[in-house]
Image (spheres, rainbow, N blue to C red):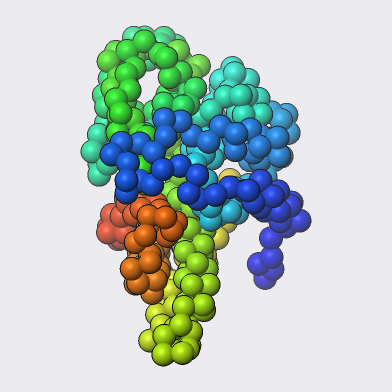
Length: 382
């Protein structure tokens, strides 16, 4: 078996590294010192550079102005973005575009995907439901006024990332007839209101309230499995972000403990320090292995490749490791930095705040352990 990345995937990593090379993780005020959001909008100059490097259309087909790559390539780029805490809706934008490309109507694809590829349109997704703990598709109801007619949506979605700066928002909803639907709504749609919320990392989120919001039939994706796949892509991309963040935090720790001396020796040479760092390195390698397994399953699922469990099982395992692993990594990093790690002039505390956000985003480890248990019960392994 060959586990190396393709030339195209490696080229995407090189392009991402070049774009993110000049990004500083402390480019906005510290979330520890800011009562509200650290900024009203995401990093638009960085977004423009991503567009110029053709990274926003990475996973879109060439006919839409994209590069035609896969979820693995997207996760590789997200990993690089998280190393510098890049403040852009790259995950939500690209995965929503993938859902539109795979399941949307030709009219919707033509309206959104060329702009998504060149960065002139920004997409995001509502994925946390009413409370952040219930399934997102149950938080909004969708009903049709007749066959082929518009849909009407009512409900609330909480903690929608980058909603204030996005042009279109993907909102999952249930019609009471089984499969969830996915409505693509312009941010200025009548009846759709946004209230400010703030993330652990200090980013501006939105609570979406939908009051008889009307969506044309062409803007609603009712293909079976469309929302489930988007949700799995979002969860897998979150694992990629957690991996990149964890790797950056452990690198900072290695550099610090290699220079910080006590009793005339670098503290990195002390056994207690080395063992803790080694344990966290093992966490990162487990996070990486389960991430690529999940991303590969999502790509392979489109080609008919199967496994003993649905791809949701691989995604759940990856998210369990990502949630637990990134928490342990930043906690150890803070511990080994001593009081210096809490200094707001040093960026490590920012990584800690982002890690907590990623740990809980789309469900903590316990939620995915429960989901994995349900899958094992429904699909006994031979």
